[in-house]
Amino acid sequence: MTNEKLDNWQEKTLHTEPIFQGKIISLQVDTIELPDGKTATREIVRHPGAAAVLALHEDRMLVVEQYRKPMEKFQIEIPAGKLDPGEDPMVCAGRELEEETGFRATTLKPISAFYTSPGFADEKLYLYLAEGLERGAMNPDEDEYLRVDAITLEQALTYMEEGRISDAKTILAVYAWRLYKLTGEV
Image 1 (cartoon, rainbow, N blue to C red):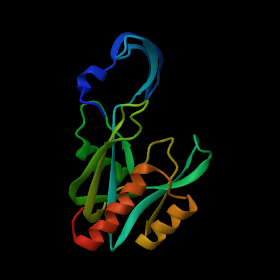
Image 2: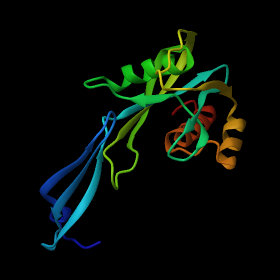
Image 3: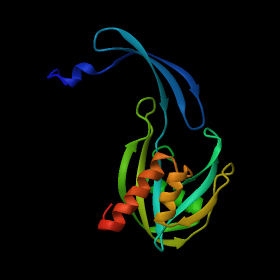
Image 4: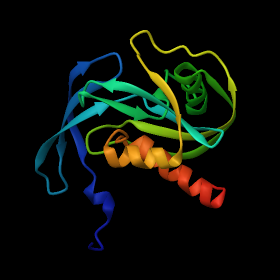
């Protein structure tokens, strides 16, 4: 890398063209000016953000299995969902945990926050560790069909090898769980 200031590499937006506004996401195409003065386009997906939960109960991780249409297959994932407007990510994490699994957490601790695919989307996902689980009331969205399970770390690693767990948030949660088991910290 040269000594040139990174500020000079910023891409200035010249024009934004809205393409699609959906229930969850929107799509826009931005015309931008590159650092060398040339123009280019960037397709950008706007997303309100989401929260996900590594929920541990009796040395098992709570997961949901559901059909994921974009991949045309069933996936095993940690509980997660999108943020409502103005919603605190920790509140969202607790809400999604109960809605999808029927469990409430007495403790939620932040693990990490990360962008899921920064090359084309602004979705930021907040990951929490949930402990002290108590029975609540499962209440999935009306178009959400899930099967809840509680799996061991060994099962989670096997599911990753088999591709049954293949989304970034769940993979990150499995590795955070392994670290937690080894060190007591996430």
